[in-house]
Image 1: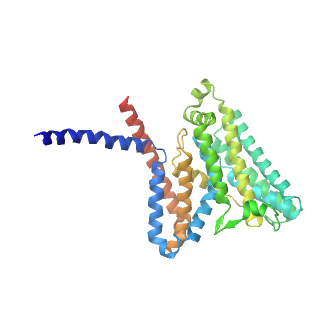
Image 2: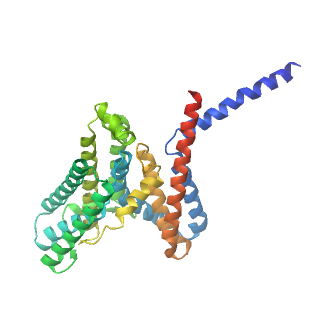
Image 3: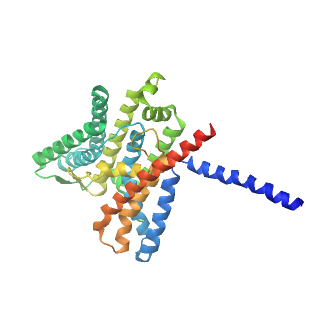
Length: 347
């Protein structure tokens, strides 16, 4: 009799533990991207592992892709959490690479000077985007798309006017080759830069008052202003951070590949935002995490390189990415709604 009573009382006690675990998992912003990354990685290990996907060169391939994408995707993700968007990153990458290549490879200027010029260009583009968005209240999608076209056309036109080509070689970058172009066992130095960028972004978002401002700005900008959050300054800093990161990648690309191309980098226009969304950042702002963004870039890199190892036609890459984007948006919204509903039930 006693054992029967113990059995009946033990079962209800176990249910809250299971529900408590589910609630805790739902509150983890990056749980969805983590599951997706594991599933997709295991899929390509099984399907393409025999062709070398699981090898060191294969791992380095997708990780290098994720790193270059992620250096830009991190600030783009933070900007999206604040409720804004930046489509000018692709042109900033191309313009930065051509500035370094023209300055050092064509005119023979010191590499440190041309790198400074490229990064300063990034600061200028970030300020332009932020000031125009804050002053006119136009959607950042439109403002930065216009910036993308303006900068792309200017970089291409000046490059051909000065050098006669949109592609300029850069053969001797000196110390910059070690800092921006070195490799170790197939892994580019960009992986290390990505790690540093991720640590910085995570610290800013989770450990500083500015990180709280980012969430507040994206959640409800009017309420944030009334609470004393400097919304315009938050957007200014994030736009500058995004553009400088894109200029950094353009500089790194010029040194790593020994050339600058004014038309390069256009793939980053949407790839960075896609990686952030796959990583759990909501398009309407106010929700996301650095770990999720990192996982989003991992997923993008794994899919991009994984198809090569499966032997399937790479023409299907866009199909995979598009499908992942739709699934990610639906999953992120579902997890957020479940978490909010459970929170309301508790109240």
